[in-house]
Length: 489
Image (cartoon, rainbow, N blue to C red; front, side, top):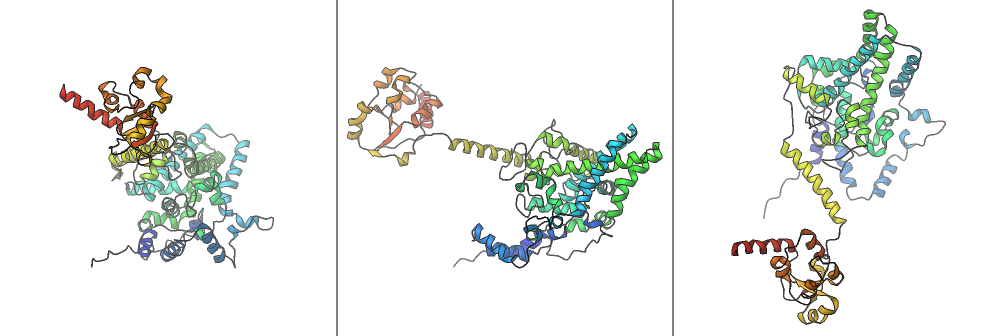
C-alpha cells in the first residue's frame, strides 16, 4: 500500500500569508496619527477564520453563500449593509478621510482662487510634488510594499518624511493595504476593488465605512521590524502636519515672504494633486489600457496613466511581476520611478534591484497572445472534426460522387460542387477529379496548394471513406509529399 502524501495545512499557510503565525510587536501611533486614512476593521481577521470560510463554503452555490452571510449579520447589520437614508447617511461616511481628501483640498482650491502666489512658490510646490510623489512610488510602493530593492538609511528617511507629507497614511498602513490588494485583487477583500466601479476604486473606498465582513490581512512582519517604519508610524500625525503644511510655509515665507502661498499651493494643493495621482493607480490603471501579460484581472497598461502616476501606469506588468523594480520595460516608456531607483543604485544609495527574467516576461506575453489567438480561432470555421463525420463505403461514394461533386483527398470525402466555378486552376481540373482520389494531385503533383486552399478544403468535408486513414492536417501531408519529391529529384 503506497504512502499518502501530506496535504498542505491551509490554516498554517493562511497564517503565514497573513503574518499571524508569529507574535509581532504593535506599533502604536501617537494620537490619531496611525489611523489617518486607515480603517482598522479592514485588517482584523485570523488565519483560522480564513480557512473556516474556505472549508465551509467550498461546495456552496453563490446563493447559499449569500444566505450564510445574511444569517451571520442577521441580528446586527453593519452600517455598510444598510441603505443610505436621511437619518443614517452620515454614519456611512469616513469623516476623517473626507476631511483629508475632500474638504481640505476644497478649502485650498477656494483660497487659491483668491490668492496669486509668488512664482518661486509655484516652483517650490512642483519640487515638493516630485519629491513627495516619488516617495510614494519609489518608497512606499516599490521599496516597502514590494521589496523590489533595498534602500539605505538616508533614502528611507527621505521617503518616510516626504511620504508623510503626501497625506496617504503611514508606510505601515499603506503597504499593508497594498499587499492585501495584491493578495485579493478584484475581490471584495481588495480594499480598492476595481470591480465595484471607477469611483469606488478611486476614492469611494476610503470615503465610506467598509464592511468588516471583507476584512483581510497580509504579512508585514518585515515592515514592523524596520525602525524607520516604526518611527514614522508612531509620529505620523506630527510628521504630516510639519511636512505637508509647516515646512512649505516656512520655506516660502522665510525664503521670499510668501507664507500663505507656501501653505496653500506647496502645501494643500500639492498634497491634493499627489493624492489624486496615487488614486489613479487604483482606478485608472484598472480601467483603461491593454493587458499584454494577463487579462484574468483588471490591471492594465496605458501611457496616460503612467504620465500622471510617476510611471505606475504599466500596471498589468506590475501585477504579473510585482517585485520587479521596473514598471516600464521599453526605453521610451515613461517611468521616472524606475529611473530614480536606478540612479540611486548607481550612487550607492540603493541595492539589490530585483527584476524578473526576460524569459519569464516573454512567456507571459506569449501566453497572452496565444490565449487571444485561441479565442479568435474559436470564432472561425475550421471544418467538421474528422471523428464526427459519417463513414461511407466505396459504393456510396461512387454513387454520389458525380451528382454531388465529391472528391476524395487524404481519405476524407469533400463536396466541392459549389467551388467548381471558383477554382483558380479552372473548372476542368476539378471536374476531371470528381469521384476520384485526388490526394496526390492536391498535394503537389499538379498544384501545391496554399494555406488558404487547405482551409477552404477543410470546410468542404462531408464524410470519411471506410477502411481509409483520414488525414486531417492536409497541409502537413502536402509538405511531407513535397519533401519526398525533392529527395527523388
